[in-house]
Length: 452
Image (cartoon, rainbow, N blue to C red; front, side):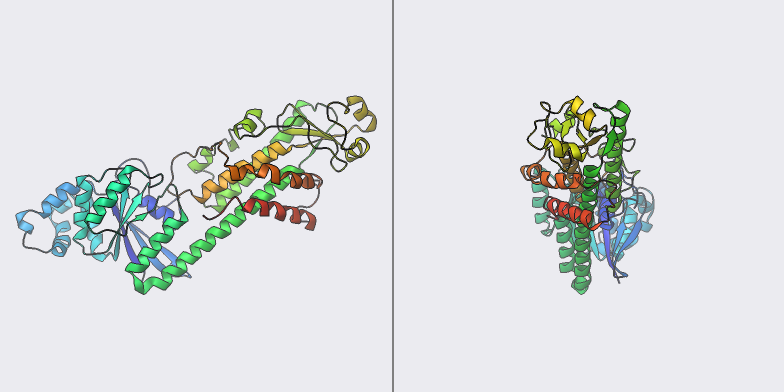
């Protein structure tokens, strides 16, 4: 038999949100910023190895706990036990009318094994919340207080810890349904193990399964990004003119944007978020495109990157010339690089007349700074999705802050960019050489996306 976990709390503290995050399903129940969104009882099981381990029971929020606890103190109930009061009160006229929502909670208390009391830890521990704890104590069932919205920490959390300790609730758990941390979920399961020792092994299997799934998602996400970066770095398009005609440049830019957008949608799907979710509009993406344009010089600056005035030269990829620091490089065919050599300075010796005499073909490709920007954005997105609770409804604002660790990528990846540029996009991506480069790129990226 599964453990019946009753999810209770004041209206709009995140009860349904907790369930959504625990079951990794954004579609469960109804979540909103309006108090009393949940108006009835719903239940869902968490299974492992085809066995139901936990049954999560969602309930409406307490709306008038002060009045309810006051009703418990009335003379007519003075001679009954707490348990008897819970059994009979929902069927009284008062329970069916004035306290209809609370009665739905009380009925579920009878059959609950463990109660998860969800607290909005941004709020002060007011009297109405304390009366809710009084009502729940009538069931004589284990209570685990869940401090929701606990990241970042607030002074109200300390007040809650003190109030809970006074009521002998020392085993509280911080579990933020918006800013999700796997370690918080681990502590919740460990607390359940201590309260339900008969289910210890099943809960441990569930915990291990969740950990492996999270690790595999990170590994798969890193692979998606490595494949995306390989596709962008090897992307090239021919131009008969220098500078290229506007439609040629736009075609190249749109092709790169499309590659990035496909990777974004793959990542959303991997983490069980949908294209229609508010998350898609908050990357920020508008009409399925990042609103912070990839080819804007300002974007490079915002991320602490600079587009070079001349890119690395060499026989393998030819001499390349930066186009207006806009994230593109224009290079000739391989033969020009071989003729001019790496010692020639772009802009001084590379003349239009020489280009036109040797070949009429020029190649557009991405410069290092733009490839690094793609990398920064992808890693930032993975980090966010890894810690985004499935109850999150707030828009995610893509930040421009790059930590020092991530900045080290600017010096670690250029060698790989150069090697990938030698691989024409016509080369089959599944070829052994290409897969080796993708694996090397994935290995470099994995350092920056961890479970911790």
